[in-house]
Amino acid sequence: MMSPVTPTEPAASATRDPQRPARLLRAEHDALLPILWRTSEEAFGRPTACPQWSVRDVLAHCAAALTRAATGRLHAFTPEQNEADVAERREWPLAALLSELANGYLDAGPAIEAAEGKLDVLALGEWVHGGDVRAALGEPGAYASEGSDDACALLGDWTRRREVPLVEARLPGGTWWLGAAVPGRAPATLTTSLATMIQLFAGRPVGPEGYELIGAQVDELVVF
Image (cartoon, rainbow, N blue to C red; front, side):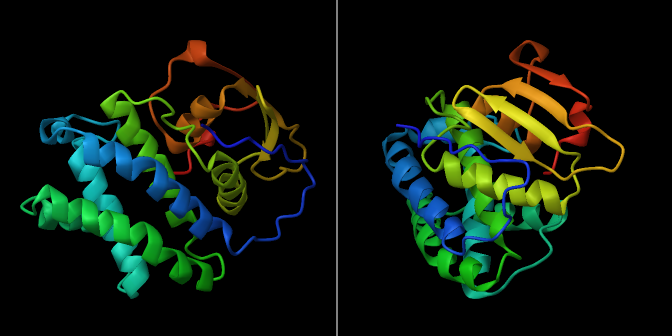
């Protein structure tokens, strides 16, 4: 069941909850791993919203990023470096890849917490990629799974860091304020579902019938 979304106010404090990233990763560990362990090996070859990456490739990227965070062997996560991490794992047995992923969800949390906010977006990215995987496998809750309240809070922080124009996101469960105020510019309004909001900010394909955006362009929202 999806976690309840906790609305925010436009002037809400951006004080960081240091336990939020680890909490989100634990939620994803508990929700996604059972799905993956019962999924047929053939299904891991399905395409995802990430160009040229299969389900297995996305999971390899996630596992590699978590391992790098947990061990302190971070790189810049450029497309070339990410692809190299994925290529390294393409010959691994599936069970070994899933074990690395499972351990990474739990082991990376303390390192992200200790980074004082610099790595919080990694936890958010892992959760979004979980949505990519669920969508490709036809599972419910893609981009709206457990931990959504923590994911939205991390998204709010990341959109402020990326200087996204202020957006009032009106969801069925309440309102989230994302981005930062721009002098002389009124806040944009986005009326949509939680899942579609996440897809828009993550740069995933979304049909125009799934949302109403006033006062901003879609490409101004993308932060990944």
